[in-house]
Image (tube, rainbow, N blue to C red; front, top):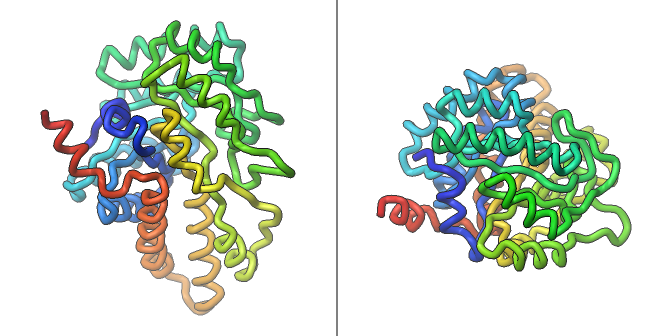
Length: 314
């Protein structure tokens, strides 16, 4: 059942956060749907500009509509992650996406508003909802590079939301894209979230760059021949605290890549004679499903799919 993120956020606000998971291929898609169905969690499938190029947009879109048929118990949104204006317009026209993100955060605020407003007008005309970003997360995401954090200013957030008519806002509060999020005593700026929530009560906020980079995954990757050093992520115990402050969507990408890397490194280390790509895939799908289900427990979304479905039928 494909729904909009707005519909999911209405049920989650102030109670839990919806997991937004980036996928790129068939094995990730199968594991993602299995994990969410098993944990009875509503969720968001995120397709990035890079994923649409890697797998081809038509293949990914067909996988989403097919998954909707073979997993009738799934309640999910199909979301474009970090799109530019051209990609957003293409996704809006596709008829598959229920939500798009326009990321013009690297432009000055008035230019960001101008671009975002055009996407909002086009999306809303087709019943599609829009996420935008204000401030910048350190790291690299698609074509957007940021050497340092540019924290979201609460007063600008209020102005931006009112000027654009967006449905959710991605805030920069100290998280980072990638596997190397924190150094020294750097922490998440929940004080910024508190101020934004006061200025925009009830408005859905989004936390990008929220992978926790599990150290056991990193250790197992390195033990199987990897060389990942100094990786660190968001403390998963902070997810529910963020949800209480209006964060209804938490993006997870890097952690899923670590699971993929760990499974394949260990598999071919232990089975050097193997060459059938389906063999590690058979290991990865249930491992990824288990990872997704565990993440949903931390987000608080596990077990809520039936009440979301019931609310949507009213």
